[in-house]
Image 1 (cartoon, rainbow over the protein chains, first blue to last red):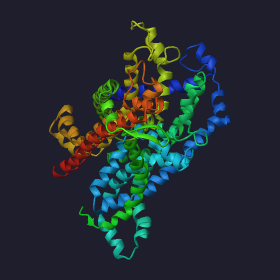
Image 2: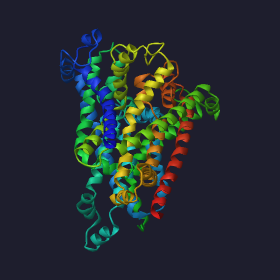
Image 3: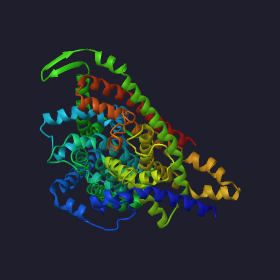
Image 4: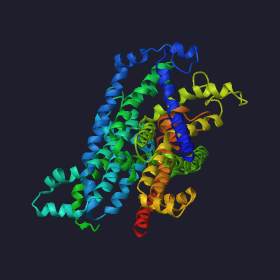
Length: 267
Length: 294
């Protein structure tokens, strides 16, 4: 009986979690005139016109392509930079290691609003405004420290004797690192990639500031539409639903590692 | 684990140092530069010393924003932490139910932050939103619900959105902490005839200490930096009632182009965050120590 009450409460919570998303889905399947004229709990005249518009109008669908490009770039960059550094932090004692680790952590906590103006100036100076690489690089500010943090946790779980044995067997450092060590922590690499993807995908402030047209991501396109033209709720909702899709796909792929990644408590 | 002492490890850290320094140190120095000068245009700046700092420290709007920020972050912790623990306790331990719960919980975390705002606008609007239309049809409120109409409504909507968005993170962290408890503990408790409250108080809660510390500090820090969700939902209004630190800072910097005061504000803001960050780091280190000795 007790178990059932508990399950019921949990189900209720999940319904509350899903209802706002369902409501957006409902809106996205109705035309704007229909939304404004009648209130309905479900779409009675299902129309895909909002989605068709998103997929045929380049000002909309390019936003998704741009976002995917810089998010992927950022994930690859964060991992490439963070892997050797995390190895250093987990294996070596060196001058200023504690301070360096703390400094990295402060950047994960830095208010993005503080860096807004200097970023615009800095990236203008090096002629990177409105490029994918600029946003990817800016997102490194919080994703690289995060990646170092998560990877260090996974690497410290691997006994140091493995490294020693490999070096005695005559492995060079790069060969050991890429052919032995990284495969050992591949779950950790997957979890790290997941979090880098997530934080780069959901970020708005830098992405909006550093792009104009060529690399403008969908999240920025959506805010500009709110302020500029009159509101087309159906179209906005369709875009919102489509921004959830990549995240949902990624969650599905890492679902078995999700709890383990959180278990390290290094989000 | 005893670590090797070798300063050559710096070569491995160097790429990270360079890329983060490019993204953090240069911009921070630019902010410092702004904060002590009055800039009229390119190449036309006057050194003003600590004037902007004095101005910002006595700025009542900044004080108000800071006060709102503390109330907001405090409320976030008070609601999300207990709720997250309850959800984690109720979640199934294995089978398809566990996978389904995990995936459902993770969905709000992967929605772009301003889309979260859009979702809640659509959900709570008095003309088209399920919540807005629903609550107004009940006729419980003296003034019809509209999140742009009254500060109390804006706050309620914002808190509902924040709890909806981030409680899953707390729940996932707690769930991970609970899963790490060996089954033998529960069997022993069962043999002793312990009540479920005793199991929670003496086994589950102490074992969740580490993840709970992280959850509390993460939620505190991240709610302190909140920007996109209130920006999309209320734009800081009505009036200034939901203008938090980041929103005020962006208004000051890009809306009014008060570079000097905005830079001084940035540095004050950054120092506050840095202080919390230091406490966070110390707490984390001590959590690790506590687990090793017990």
